[in-house]
Length: 321
Ligand code: HEM
Ligand SMILES: *[C@@H]1O[C@H](CO)[C@@H](O)[C@H](O)[C@H]1NC(C)=O
Ligand SMILES: *[C@@H]1O[C@H](CO)[C@@H](O)[C@H](O)[C@H]1NC(C)=O
Image 1 (cartoon, rainbow, N blue to C red):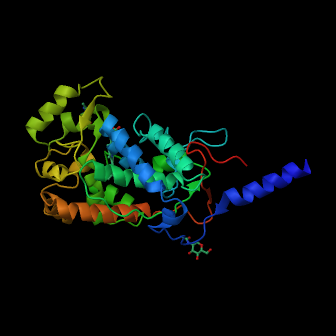
Image 2 (image 1 turned 90 degrees about the vertical axis):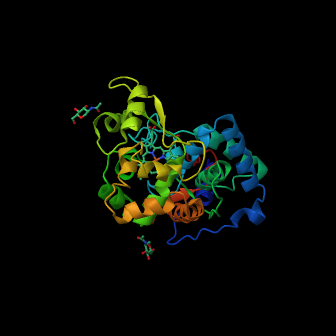
Image 3 (image 1 turned 120 degrees about the vertical axis):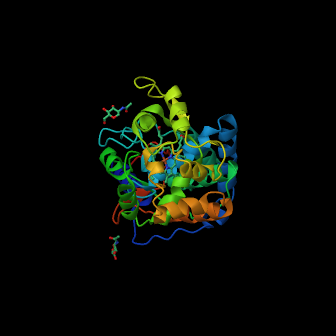
């Protein structure tokens, strides 16, 4: 009994730690301790995208939804428990975020390749997002490493922190600014909508009711998204939804943004936001570079001071203690 208690104390002390102020991420963290980590992640991401091209978009979105809720801490990956309701059933995530099985597959493979629990789930999601961008034709960027995983998750926090596709520009900007991100980051990161899909329920009002939309484009949306029913029918976020290019921005210039929040970035009012959309349209080199820099910024969002963190053994569950 005493031995068992001693074991528990020992295990807890080494498995969970309190986030120190300014824990610094670095690009080379795994180079010496597990050089196979990043190649293992990349090969599984590539295979997953070969199986299903949309998976790249889903993995990229997963990182965004992780980072915007209490920092990039793998909280989005946690299943519900008796003590908390996690983020998976929050409005913006429910029946919408995907890729959990791919993250599980990566975590198992990385634990094996590293002969132990070395790489956090939050780092895996960050690297998988980057590898997805590169795999779909974007430019790779260096991901900083050393994130730790949360020991809890909150549905309410996800509902409060994830931006709504029905918001206007000033609300979107406030959301990003509350994370220390700028208008430039908002416009560059929204370029993630150059890949992937949204559901009819999300773009229906835009297709039927909005006026800042190309009429032929609206007509084509209405033909796939009926006024009622068909909520889960998918529409592509831009006209080349499998390629990480600047066609998303071209579309905004033509009032072909799929989401209300997308078209908010370009309203033809010569605002700063309009200028950034024009700048990225047809300028993929600049877009890729700025996107990578903004991803690094977003990827630096860290859990609040004093949170308990660990490197999770299984991305869906906190470690036993
Ligand atoms: C600016 C605020 C944003 C809003 C309001 C927003 C909202 C949405 C919505 C509603 C969807 C479709 C979900 C569905 O119908 O199931 C979506 C898809 C997506 N979002 Fe965003 N998003 C935003 C920013 C971002 C950012 C910053 C990223 C990544 C850096 C991102 C990456 C994606 C991707 C890749 C998809 C497609 C996912 C897939 O096909 O599985 N979004 N977003
Ligand atoms: C975190 O705590 C440290 C002291 O422990 C403090 O210096 C720092 O300002 C805090 N950071 C935030 C974001 O509260
Ligand atoms: C169009 O807007 C009206 C008024 O806000 C709303 O009642 C209706 O549901 C909207 N139509 C669609 C298809 O979203």
